[in-house]
Every structure is written in C-alpha cells, then in structure tokens.
Length: 103
Image (tube, rainbow, N blue to C red; front, top):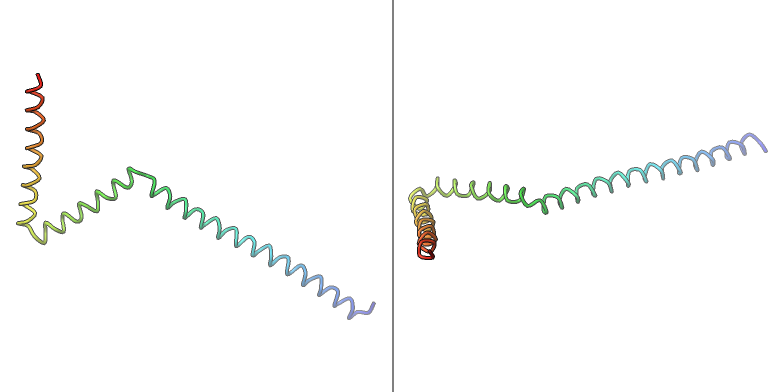
C-alpha cells in the first residue's frame, strides 16, 4: 500500500462520512420541516374547532361591516336599527302576552 493508496482510502472514508453526515442533516431538516407543518395544521384545526374564538371573530367582522355601512349610509343604518328595535319589541310583546294569557 503506497501513500497515494492510503490517501484514496482516507478520502473514500471521508466521502462516506461526509455523505452520512449530509444524510443526517437532511433527515434533521426534514423532521424539523415536518414538525412545523404539523404544528401549523394543529393551529388551523384549533382555530376551526374553537367555537368561542369563531364567534368572537364573526362578531368583530359583523361590527366592522355595520360601522362601515353606518358611515357610508347613515339614513339606511338608522332605518335598519329602528326596524330591528321594532322587531325585538314585537317579539317581547308577543312573549309577554302569551305568558299573561297562559295563566
């Protein structure tokens, strides 16, 4: 075995070690990427299945839409609010009347 043969064997060993280390690094990077994707999926599921959070989000969106509508068309907003008030009053009156007549 000459010095050049020993150098080739050493370089082959180094190449194998280098390749193995690359494979380990790639595996680690893949596992970290999979963990991040899994965490993102869990966050999305949690957001979708968290009913109070969904109600809060939808309520905030409705308020924003209502404020935008009221700023753009104040007369129509007043009429809509009056209509809702009349509707709620009518329902309350009917419930009270049914309760009184039910005695």
